[in-house]
Length: 497
Image 1: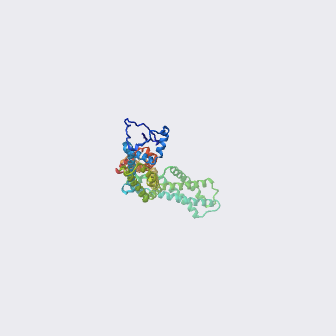
Image 2 (image 1 turned 90 degrees about the vertical axis):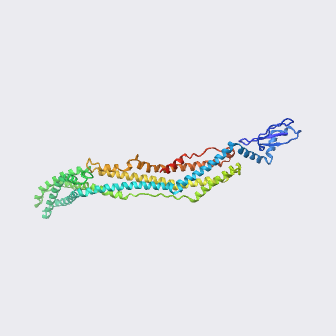
Image 3 (image 1 turned 60 degrees about the vertical axis):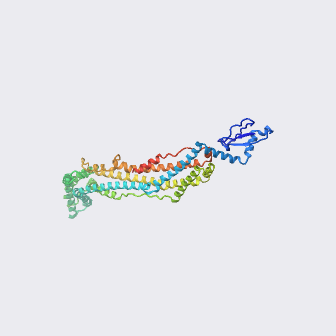
């Protein structure tokens, strides 16, 4: 009698071992009954029929050998604790990964109180309230500036600007009269217009001389005294224009004193330089008038622009009901097959067949579809909204800073009221608790959740694909586990805020 013992190797080869059985003690029995195949032969059998090839062919042709081989493998994976734990660990890790993934989706996407959409809406509301508060502060400061201007500066600037505009119109009229006076005797009315221009220019000259002293006196009468007062209405090139107009007025009044007495007769040809100088004077008077009114225009423009800012305070996302249901069903399916295998109600072969047949459509495809929907409908929208919010905030605060800086040019050199106003904005104090720990941390939380969700969808899909590989079933399951530290940190971070 020959005892044949075959062993399972990873490449599934069958090896035959033989031994003659005499009256002596038999070799030690097989550890498992399914590990052995015993065949009896006549003692007169030829050696050729006992060759390895012949014996193996006989075993392979036996109808129950494949089934017994699978049964032996199943028994080995049940009896060997390490092999059993590899399978159980991977199954439970996969189920736990899916459960935690669903829990995280529920927490950050589905459940309103803890969802990203709610967090984003709160963040938008918080940022909007902050910006609205800064707009209110800006309008309050603008009201102070406007009040000071209307009470102490407007009458000076508007009065001088009106004089400049009237002199400009009258100079244009006189220009025509001078041209006519070179070819005919002009009327008394035209002579009066010449004299009126002379008087207006003299009066304008006096106003320009007294303008600075009158502005300083008005500043002393202000309830804010030297603060919020546009002492330097003439900034940049306006000072030079002011001096040019002042000098030109004296030149033109002296020339008119010479010219007016000669108009009772046809006057000699007037030098072309006179007309050129009159044109330059008119251009400078218009420019000076604009300079005087530029501060008021700055205030008006600032006010109108602040009134146009709008803020978004809501962010919505509608989860895909059908895809979520399929994803949940996949988790339940995973739990069922894991429980069935652990309870020894399903073989490892059956486990592999179920993963191959249904694993992709039950688990991987719903997970991929859910990720795609969240990626396109939530994360992309969220990313665009954050970019838009950043752009709006940069635009708003840059504009306010530029406007305040522009207004500061008109103030007294030692007036720091506007600078102190800007320094009170919490946006500039980023290390401070009010902004850094609430608003900015909210952005970090959203980005954290975005990255974690993306990572887990990708890794969970990879684990499930690994489980579905048939070679992985009998070759030994991977013991790699999903690390949930980043998820837990993200959840703790959201709960703390």
